[in-house]
Image (cartoon, rainbow, N blue to C red; front, side):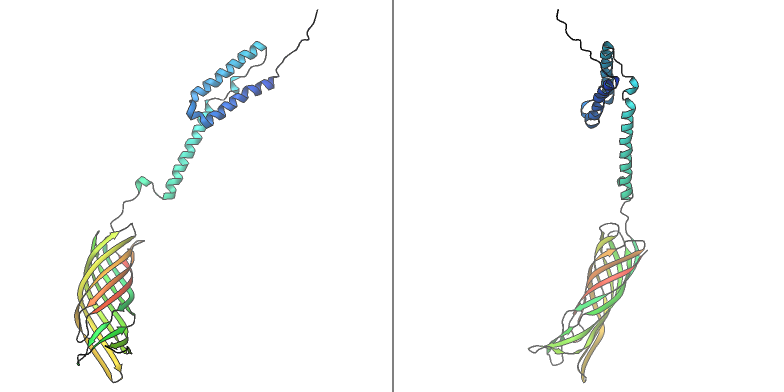
Length: 291
C-alpha cells in the first residue's frame, strides 16, 4: 500500500490580517483618487463590510481567526476627509477676498468726482514767430526763446463737464529778428501777457483717481512787446486785446482733497499795434485741492 505524505497548511493570524487589510487599504486609496467617478461613500463602506464578512466565513470554515469590525475603516474617515476639503475651500475663499480687500460682489461704486477746485500751476510757454510791420512798411519776424508761465484755475466740476476761471502770466525773452531777404539778427526784449479767461469743458473719469478733460475759453489779455535792436533803437507796444484758448489734459485725484494734473493749452491773442496775433503753446503742471 502506497502512503502519501500528509501536508499541513496553516495560516498565521498576523499574515491573514495583513492580506485582509491590504485590499481594504487599496480600495480606500482607489476611492480617494477616483471615488467620485465610480461610487458613493455608502456603497464603498458596504462593499468593504461585505468583503470582510466573506473572508470571515472562509476563515471560520478553515478554523482561522476572524477580523473584528473595529479594524474596518468606517464612515468617520470619509467625514473627516470631507471636513478637510470644506476647510481648505473656505480658507481659500477667505484669502482670496482678503487679497482683494473687499468681495467682488461688494465693490464700491465709482463715486462722482464733483465739487469746487482751486489749482495753481506752473509751466513753460513756446511762442510762434510774431510778425512786425514797421512805419516804413517793412515786415520782419520776431523769434523768442522758450519762456515760463504761472497762474491758477478756479471752478466747479460736475460729473461730465466743468466751468472755471483761468488767469495766467507768461513771459518769454526775444532772441532774433529776421527781415525779409536778410539773415536773422540778435535782439533783446521780451513778450509778456497777463490773461483772464472764462472756460468750460468736458471731463471723463477712467477710474477713481484719473481722468481726461477738454475745454475752451475766451477772455482778455494785457499784451506787451518790447524790442531793442540797439541801445539807441527800441520799440514798445502794450494794451488789452481779445484772447481765447483750448486745453486738453489728464487729471489726478489719488487721495482725499488732493488734485493734480498736466495740461497742454493753446492760447491766441489778437494783434496789437504793428505786431501780429500771437500763438502760444503752454505745458502746465497743476497741483491743488478739490472740496
